[in-house]
Length: 265
Image (cartoon, rainbow, N blue to C red; front, side, top):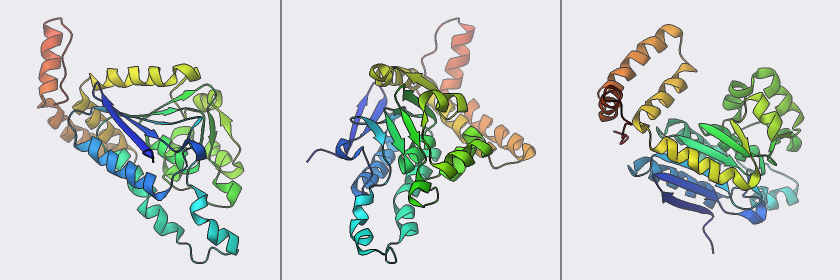
């Protein structure tokens, strides 16, 4: 049986590919567990300096595989289904790890993305999409509320008014609209998406990735701090950044008028 999540490392970039194309890369328990494990592995591996998430086949991910609860739905009752426990065990740890992992993470969104798949895409630091990508919040279509961090990430990316309309209606948006709203960073032709994303990832991986990780930390904190608190926090983080080997290399390269060689240290 093929791996439900492919993991490859090349040129300091870890490529994680959701690999259940027959169900549009919907998540079952094995795939969520594999993603948790691989994120932890990439975090520990100093050879990995950037991550890219994408999907096999014609889409990024359709979200939770509802087929795992077929018996309950056929029986006509979800009284014995523990939705909250499932989310706490599967998607919540993934989103938390992605937001706190101090290496850049890019989503290469190839085709459809929906539900928890969208939550995982929005938990990435950057999102590049194919020109044929379609974005579905989708929970309301099956009478559920958002999960997988969408209640946090969506209004922060697109604003509350658009987030509410998107969530209330469940209507899809295309890549052009997603870019205009600020949901994604860039749009590429479908056949160029992965190559362009990996090229960008390699560029980040060659950069001062320790500083990039600290930058991610500061910007995450900015969402929950007052200005005065954030200014103090920035000073603390800058103390760490200023003592890195990459900072010394960057300054010396600037003074010597040469390109820096960063090591992520």
